[in-house]
Image (cartoon, helix red, strand yellow):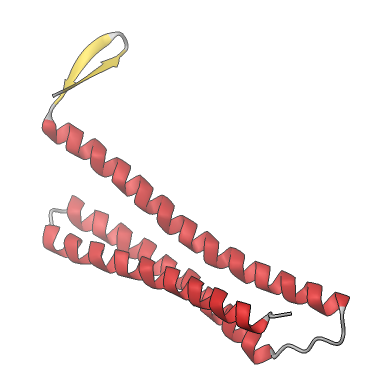
Length: 136
């Protein structure tokens, strides 16, 4: 049992309420992590374009393959898209648990985690490609 003070009155939370609060916290942290992955991939795309523009303005002697740059941007865009898919799967996971379909929810949770890891892998792959292309 957990005691909580609200409006100067002590209330008792039972095990189900504590579990619900813990699930809310876990869901919030998971959503924050998925949002961060999306922002990471999006910011990497912007940084790539900014760096490319900076190189183009400063020097005319540096040659960079546009197909290499487009592949980097493709990886970051695919990573951002995959994070959107993981957000959607997370929503469906929560919806299925709310509608009392725990087996479907468990499968969707695994798919959410897999999509998040794929998005991170695409980010690191894009960073690897960018480090090879922009070796200036």
